[in-house]
Length: 457
Ligand code: H79
Image 1 (cartoon, rainbow, N blue to C red):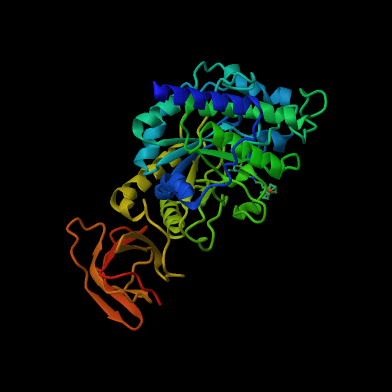
Image 2: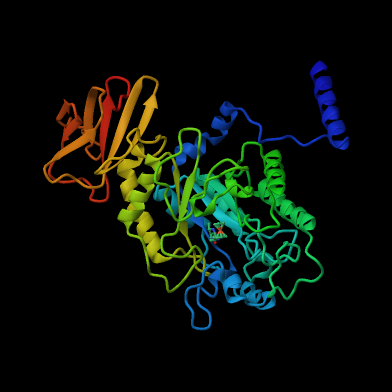
C-alpha cells in the first residue's frame, strides 16, 4: 500500500513536472562512469556493418552516360524531385532476406549493423506515418527495418539507424534545392525538426532498443549547435542508453571526423580514413569506409578493396582504440553484391582464428611498430598483448621494440596447442623466434602474456 502510494506520488510528480513545462533533462552532463557503462558494448565491438540502401539503388549509379553516382544521385544529377520519386515505384527488393543479411554480418564477425533509415534524399526505408516518401510508395509491401530488427534480435546483433539530418526532399529543410519542384512555400526549420523528431520517435519506439543513432548531413547552415544539443537530448530521453554519433552537432572537422570546439554526441566519425594515432582512452571513435568507391549500390564500380586491406584496416582501427564500420550497398533486388559477400566470408574466416585479438581490446602501447600493429587486454594485474604481424620477418626474428616487462608465455593464436615460442629480452626490447611460414599472409597474431605489469620504453 505504502509502495503504491509512493509510486503514485512519483507518477503525479512526473506528470506535474511535464505539465509545468520543466526543463528537459540535459543528457550531455553525464559522469565518466555512466558514460563508460553506456559506451561499453560499442568499445568492445570493434567491427560493424554499414548498409546504404534506398531508391538510388534503382539507377545503380548510372544516368545519361555517367556511371559515377551513388546515394548522392539526386544532388549530383540535379534531377527534379518529382522525377526522382519515380524510382520509388521501381523499388521492389523481392530478394531481400533480413536473416541472410544479418547472417552475413555475423559470420564476418560484425557485432552491429547501421542501416540508412533515411539518407539525404529523405526516403524512408520504413512505413513512416509522417510521410508517403517512404517504402509505402513502393510496390514492396513489407517493412525492411522491422524484418531486420527481428533478425538482429534473434542473432544477437545490435541494430542501429543512420538518419540524415539534411533532407533534399522535404520542403522545410532550410537550404532547399532549386530542383525540388514539389516544394512550395518558405522552408521552416522548426517545422522540419518536428517532422524529423516524429520520425525518430517512430524508429526508437517501434524498432528498438537501438544501439546507435548515426546522424549525418549536419554541415549545412540551417543546422546549428543548439539544434544539435536539443536533438541529442530528445533522442536520449526516448532511450537513455542509446549512443549518438558526433554528427548530431556541429563539432566535426572535415573527413577526419573528430570534434573540435563546440561538440555534442558520443563519438567521432572519421570517414574513408583511419586516424594516424588514437585519441586516448576516453575518446571513442569509429572509421566508416566503403568496400569499393561508393556507399550506395553502383553497378559499374569494381574498385574493390582486397580482403588483406580490409582485415588490416580493422586491425589498424582496433590498435588505435577505434571501431571499423564497413559498408555494403545492396542492390534494388535486395542482394549484397557478390564481391562484398566474398570479402565478408574471407574476413569471417580470419576472424574465426583472430577474434580474441580484436573484440574487447584496447589501443596499442607502442607509438609505432615496423611490422604491423598491436592490441592489448588488461584484466586486473594480467596483461596480454596481441601482435598483429602484417610483414612476416624473413629471418624469423620479430622484435617488439621497447617492451621491458618479462613475459610468461608467447604463442601463435592460430596454433591451437599454444606451443611456446622462444623469446629473448635485450636492451632493444623483446625478441621472438617465429616459424618460417606466416599462419595468415593478411595478418597473423602473436599472443604475448606478460608476467608483470606493462612497461614500454
Ligand atoms: O552516407 C555516406 C555519404 O553519403 C555521406 N557520409 C557517408 C557516411 C557523405 N556526405 N557527404 N560526404 C559524404 C562528403 C561530403 C563532404 C563535405 Fe564537408 C561536406 C565537404 C564539405 C561539406 C564534411 C563536412 C567535410 C566538411 C564538412
